Image 1 (cartoon, rainbow, N blue to C red):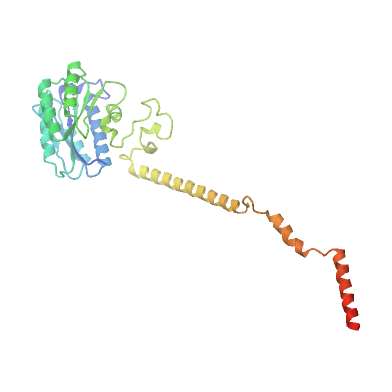
Image 2 (image 1 turned 120 degrees about the horizontal axis):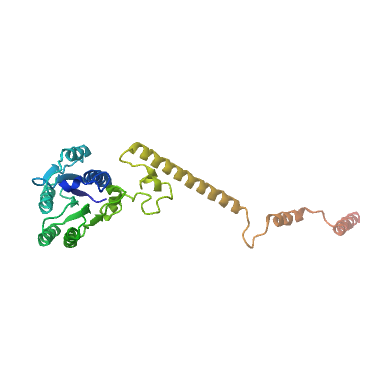
Length: 306
């Protein structure tokens, strides 16, 4: 799995108070941050995840990139964040880039995942220049655009995405409001598609079939991050059952091979024919042969008396 250092940038502007996403734009972001953290750390335990906000007086780093990922710190950072002001998208991305430069493990790939749900004040040209700098320094940037889906906003993000795309991939996910959670929609985007997170069942119309379809897309219908012991027990049970079935198949094949050994190949005499052939030498001699032997014995006796 990919070893990454990821900075998550949340939008804590006044626009995040709106309730057009369940339960609100801010709470939907918090749920999505939980999902991203779990996906990155489960894909590679040595990956690190940081958190920062980009609204209010200015962007603020809430959780720095550390060698050991601690979700408790992420929750504490989200809890301390206050909803206020307007977003500073370009400044927030630059500070996230600076935080990635100071990561402890330089073998980690650099990635920024930014949420935006409010109007973007920066002009398109400045965003394109920033995107080219990030691409030159091998920094991937993923945008989760939701809430304010104004054509001007999406056009700016599309231009940024076109100029920042590199070998590691940078993605733009535009998620309209709906009855589903933001995190459920995020799972279906390329942003998390490479981290072993399956789409949640029932959203594509094909999740009603199979055992895992009704469990939110997780294996056996259990989220390993919430109940790892149950997920491990179910996985071990499945592996034991699979091994037992393979053993039965091998046993049946072996029995079938032993049964085939008793069947003669083409051109070989059958067992009954061999028995009759071997038994023919022990059969009683015909009457004529007995009379000839007796006659020979009498002739020999006469010669002896003479």
